[in-house]
Image (cartoon, rainbow, N blue to C red; front, side, top):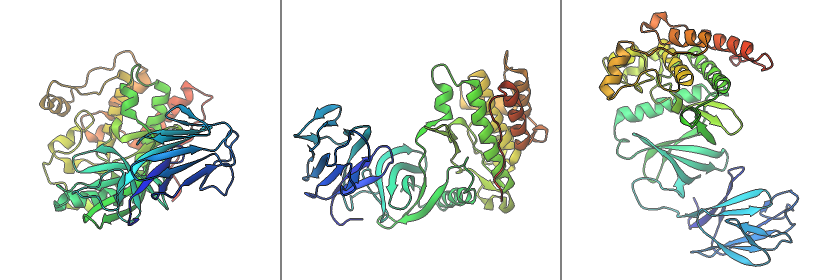
Length: 395
């Protein structure tokens, strides 16, 4: 990391980050002799310059057509850019992320800031029970999601081992486009805690799509679940069970790609979970969790993922999860007894597939590969013009 503070400017489209030292201007224009060049009509040869003076970032317009700061035109003059402010140059957008200190105090990293020696944290994207996820930038990997293990749990050996296993299993699945990839893992030398750099998915989760006004279109939802099924099939072929399939863990990119993420509860069948999941331990998400996971998470094998996938299909068809209740205890009791409301007037073929996946007895459920094949067949019949060809990657 630089030994002095710097200002961070992000190219919104590519995610790339540029660092400005105090008093050293960053030039932007159409030609390659600029620090940042955009070969686009509407961008002048020397369009503008950005200068960070310490407390303030200032833009000086040098162009014929002008620049925009937070939507306001700036032409042949200068203007201050607020933290988080957008700079418009033709169709391009730059964002002033803020000031990055070389070694900010505190028990955990903050954004903007540094993680390790090379990773620049841009913003906090999410926070869970054991970790914080940041949108970040790395000089080799580009735009990434940085997952950091929180201070108050990093001293727990079991939590650390689960974090390491999540990263290891996702690395094992590298090469399949339906799974979020892991670029690398590392340790924060300042704070001594673990982090992982993962593929950054710029988009929404399936949960957001399902719960949005109007819900999710059936054909689009079937396409998404088809790809999830193939991703899970790939994991199962490698002896990996996800154990937490739910709409929140299915990410949809801006260009309609599907990514399965969060292997924090996953286990490798050949290692029998390494003893991390104890007999009788409860693990998973109520409403999407298989009945056998409630009584004993160590029993959750491939059929548990089929149940979770079927629960997502139910949510797509019915507009709600298959199991609900006034309290968590009600939900768990209903799951354990297989109390699933009828689907009503939905496509009968999809309804049969869905209810087969939600069978109370694990042995009665189809395999995830059979689910993928059945859903692909339905999609071909529903829309013969839609090319459906999903296969496992060659190994």
